[in-house]
Length: 241
Image 1 (tube, rainbow, N blue to C red):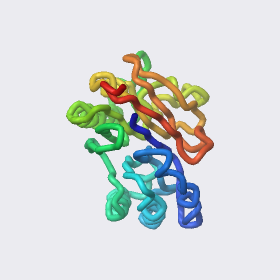
Image 2: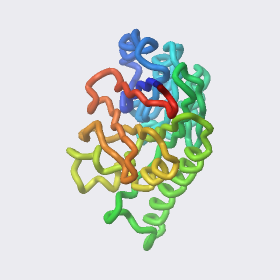
Image 3: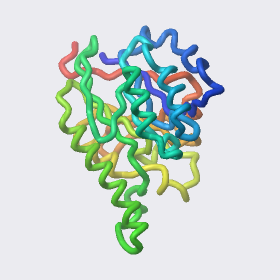
Image 4: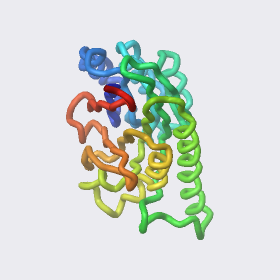
């Protein structure tokens, strides 16, 4: 069994320094890894990124993160990534990493992801250059994510995104903004790779549990949804007694 802790949308800033870290005392007893599903800062500044790096460094388990839309707002995403990596936090964008956990080998692929919508109501790659650029950005990120997922050499594969791969976990959000909350292409990547779990954030008014068309469990770990320090998810390893 591999135990995963996950949370997103913590939206830290300088005034919150030390507050989240104070809640992580039992993390190493609860989980083998902590996944951070983006929107780690409020406004995407480097100073906020420094707070994030301090909050999640040396917490007793490996920490793997993706960035979210808030983390890009001030055009300092590269600096935030640099600060986090300097403290030993793995930040993924179209990449994967494999960890040797006590229960087996865990592979995690990550991307911010993007909007675009879902089957039957997805944005078309047609018309104005701005619309085509919007759709292509989502397609490009999803394609890199899919390649990273399928390339993982692990007992179980997990997908980590900020934007949602499914509509299920958006229930409670206005349907009019689903286009901006996720993309079916992220779910296709999970299904094609035979992933065991998909983790995302972003949808503050959504619900925790959903599933891809192919039967992969999806969990929305946005802090306003969880209402707890992190969600805990256990994954069975194939061949485990």
